[in-house]
Image 1 (cartoon, rainbow, N blue to C red):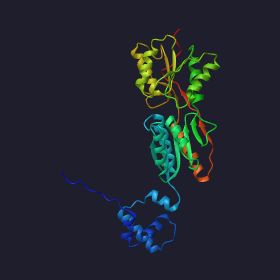
Image 2 (image 1 turned 90 degrees about the vertical axis):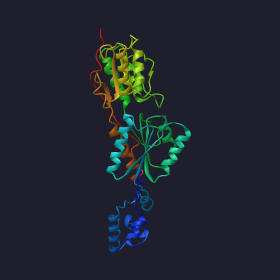
Image 3 (image 1 turned 135 degrees about the vertical axis):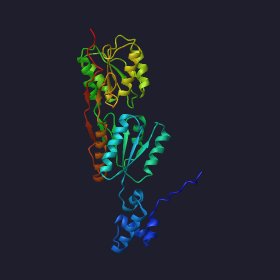
Image 4 (image 1 turned 60 degrees about the vertical axis):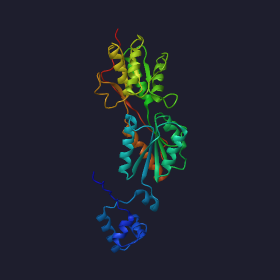
Length: 339
């Protein structure tokens, strides 16, 4: 077996050696902190090109006093809403010249949260965006010191929050979706909820708002987890309940699972049960039947969160709240109840 090659990444000392100058002189050229003669500057730049040297952003930040790194703290990076929000943050940060690093805090355990906070603060970050979509994220944002520029992307806006927040007004959207199902003639609407980081997520509150405004009793929430298989089990159970003709689910994956469970139990969607999802993930439009859902622009959420953070970094101030309204997308999984 051949011996693996070791690739040595050029460092600032290599540039100084090739250019015949000191390391501080190379550093002055890179940061522009002190004038350097044209002759030395050209020698240094020629050495950088020859070696393929890439200045270390963290080192430059320590010298120049300008951090160029943004930290994103999230409880998950694979779920649709999390991934798209991170994409939005990264797009906006990259356009503004920032590097984005992502740290996952996957449990609300106190030690895990503290370790995550220490890890982030150990880096030369200019600011932090916390995806407080779950309990771990909520605890993490509360653990960072107030002296660090921070913005949170949240499921439900909180007027008492100490940090600026960006969110999607899914409470209004859930009320619209529930009103739509009631308008089709359904006697009531049931709710299959994903795990809630707060006592009531916006989509749950909107569902309750619509039922109460219609003078209807609010049914008991049906709990599911984040996985489609959890929705399938719920669908199998709901198939035995003649009172269930319309369901609004906490996300599209669970909704698709509910449809699968209903199908396996001999129920037809939407003939027997109408199903609405949440998020408008790529699977929603190609599911059978195509899923009626609430479209949430998570990429825009990420853009808005970074915009707030950028203002906070550069001016020390930012709007405390940034929201947008999701919209209902009607497809094939909803219809009027059978007479």
